[in-house]
Structures are given as structure tokens and as C-alpha cells.
Image (cartoon, helix red, strand yellow):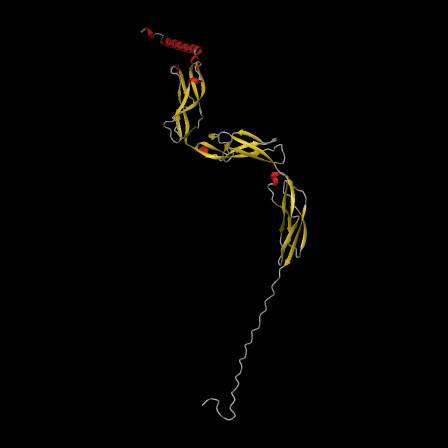
Length: 343
């Protein structure tokens, strides 16, 4: 047959023609890709359960096809969703489905970058937590005590059981640096875990509280009793039977917050080991850190020493002599020779 003549040349020409056609088509109608990132919708969410997407709440959708068609696509024409109808409590691996206009399916290839998502389904719980206020910084006004009161004093935290159980405290932090007077403001508390890290995947009701900050003037001096610090008591047979200290009280000066922590001031340690009689001892007062002594720097401690009376040694008594029984006198015979016994 004549068609078999020059068969190799004909095949080569056909392949060349096909390649040229594909090349021209690729130049006139190139194949391109476009990636859209859209939120993932959750369908058929079970009531009283919290759903968490471990692989992220947004899906990257790849659209591939001829350049003219790809350039006509928009993100709002796409919809990504996960159907939770058959999801179970715990971790699930569920497909990410994509919806798009029907005509796209004839000319384009549309697929999610991650076709499967890890979905965790947990019971939803709620707990009430008090609001704790943390004040930092120094206000402009001196000699004041800062007080902060949140209203309401507690909030309700709701969410997945594992997340709500992480919450240890709900706190409000406020920096008082430069504060010159009372202040009220709306602020959002932060739920934190045992390490102080924020717990973000929970809901809080109400989302904000009203914080009232007050600056209360405080005295900068305080009177406290003096307590002598007696150590190394006298050796036996001596003992302390009475002691006194003068002055009985002293005045301290310092910040209100520091003064509030001090209720007594001690003398330096006093050793009484070598004392055998009454004594009067001058000893310096020990000012606690952060305060100053106003009206006295030392105290006079008087002690009265008494020697214990030692018991006398017991003496052994000689054995008592037994009394000699009286001797019986012999009976006298009658002078007339008659017998004493009656006849």
C-alpha cells in the first residue's frame, strides 16, 4: 500500500504538527493556577459541643486551568465546608468539600490544598471565675494606698472542656504610673493558665468589666511596740525573773504599704549567759528594711537575776532505841503470914 511509503517521515511530521499545535495553544491559552484562602464552614454542629479545627479555620483552594477562565474566578464564588453529621467526640479526620459554579467543573480543576482536616469535638462547659486585679507602677501622688474594684467581680468562662479547665484565674492588669487621682475605665479581663499564658479559645460573659481605681491617702508614720530579743539565758542556778524595756514604743517612718507590714520592732540580740546579778543593758534597735526610726535609736533593757535555792543534802537518822519494858515488882507477903488469895 502506498500509505506505508515514507511511514517514518509521516509519523515524524504528525508529531511535529501536534507539538507545534500544543506550543501555539500554550502561548495563546496558557495553563495557570490561582490559590484562594477562604473560611471553612462547619455544618451540622452538634448542640452543646465545641468544635475546633486543628489544621486551621481557613482552607487554601487551588484553581487550575486556562488563563482566560482562571482570571474570571473570584474567592466569593467558592465555599469550603466540613459536614459534622457523623463526627464523634474526640478527634476526627473529615474531608474538606468545595462548592463552586457548575460551569467551572467543565473547564477548571478545583481542589483544596489539604483535602482532609483534623477536627476535635468536645463537650461545652462553663464556669464562674472571680476577677483578680494586678496593679503595677507608681502613681504620681505619693503616700497613698491604691485600691482597684472590678464590677462585676466575676465572669463566666465558656468553651471546650479542655480549654475551660486550663483557666486558673481571670485577671486585669493596670499600670498606675503617673496616675494623679481616682479613675474608672472599661477593660477586658484575660483568662490565663497556671503558667500565666492567655487561654484564647474561650468565651467570656461579660466580655468587659468596669474597673474603679481609688487612691487613698495613707499616713507615713506608725508607732509600734519594742520587743527585747533575749538570747543565751543565764546558766544554772541563775535565772531571769523579770525584765523591762525602755522606750516601750518607737515611731517609724516609711511608705504606707511597708508600714502596714510591720507590727513590732526588735532590739539587737542580747546575750545573758554570763550574768549572775541584775543588769541594765543598752542595745541598738533594728530598723526593718524600708523604714526609719524617728524618735529612738537604742533601748535600755533591765533584767533581774535570781539564784535558785539549792536543797540541803538529806541526813540519815540513827535507829531509835526501843523502850525497855517496865520490870514487875514482886508482890509483898502479908506480915501476918496470911495468903493474898481469897479463900
